Length: 418
Image (cartoon, rainbow, N blue to C red; front, side, top):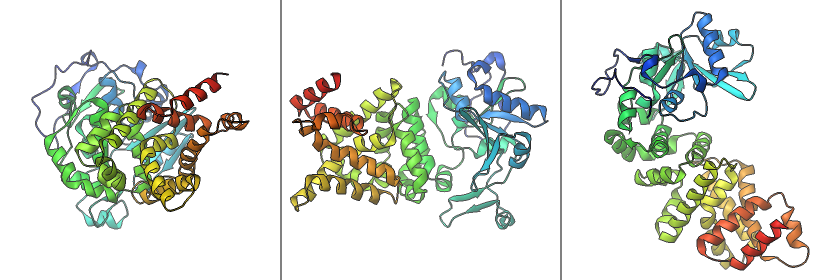
């Protein structure tokens, strides 16, 4: 972390409920406004000019300190969502569980949240529909507002609880995130069992950050993930679909997958598939090679959409299921499509894959049969088909991984060059 000064850090232990923040003044850290979105800067200054406190929060601050390029910049403030909407004509309010303001700029959305308070003990808050939990303790609604200190300690991990203050360009740390950045540790704020119960998706986020950043998960948190992994089944399937894309599109999919295996989170996410790959090293090797290729594409800034991701990861499994259906008399084309639909539709109770995406995955897999058709005008028609490229990428990777279809692969590579 070149340029990142820790001169003000203290010997940090787990934070008390409230603590004096560690503050790094501008000369003591490497974060520059030049590396912050101009849209986020506009939002910060507008809130400041209106008399409100506002910070860049969370992952953007973490990434800037690590000399990484944040994907987005979130703002946190003491202005309520309604007050934010009055200030910005280009604002819309979203969400019931977490009421947020989305401030729209050309090509960019600055998500702006109000400081959250601790989980309330007073049940009258629940009756006012500002905060509620389900029977299992998972937070269903959270719109109780608080202070910057309270908001920092409500966040999931210490490294995500850092603030950048536009007033004096300082970094503010209420939870010990600076020290954990230095030690390369993913540490939960608060009791891990309670925090993972409140929001089981935090377990997935922990392994994603560990894999992406090359950090270790703090032992207490890691053991809690292993104990609470089955609670992942309580997470909203539509949200899980978004999280799965983040896991495998992060550019470090192989490392993330290894953390999913190590922590046993793979089973509640992809139950049948995870058991299937455990039965045979060749199956497992296919998944690893797929993820390595995904990482190469991401590092080269090549676009990879979710349907190709799911086709590649589950392709060998779908081929296996199709072969079983063919044994019972189903045609290869129909068996392939039925295998994809059965698996991905069944998976929707945990990870809700959109119907359109399922159809597109089925197209990629059933189109594999067309690579065997090299006579007449069929190859040229297939080459012009809108689904050709995705099907070809799967065919190419599968052929090389299993050292098969060499002549066919050469034929199609040469045909594409003509």
